[in-house]
Figure 1 (tube, rainbow, N blue to C red):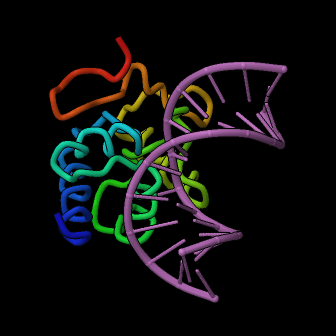
Figure 2 (tube, rainbow, N blue to C red; figure 1 turned 180 degrees about the vertical axis):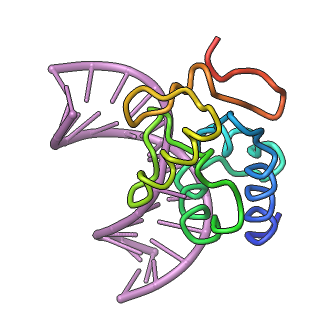
Length: 107
DNA sequence: ATGTTGACCTTGG
DNA sequence: CCCAAGGCCAACA
């Protein structure tokens, strides 16, 4: 799988995240691990930073539910309007966490 | 080829 | 809450 295809795969997956739900960089990397041959949350983060402008990037947070640096205000507002459960400025990923299988990350 | 860096993750002080 | 260490993968100097 070429780098461009991996980028597309990531963006497509992010677009598939339902409103009110979120996914962590690690979960995304993990979900594409089989198909991409690589598993690196950092790469997903880099991809989001560079090509995340066209997708619901605010639905992607780190494992601790932390919002993307520099976009915290924006992300928080959007998540709030979607009804994503927040604890302060962090997402309750145990409740809003989502995977392509429709299961919650916690559990 | 080596070293650093990055919207990361987990474990452990 | 903050920091460090070891893994992870790709881009860049």
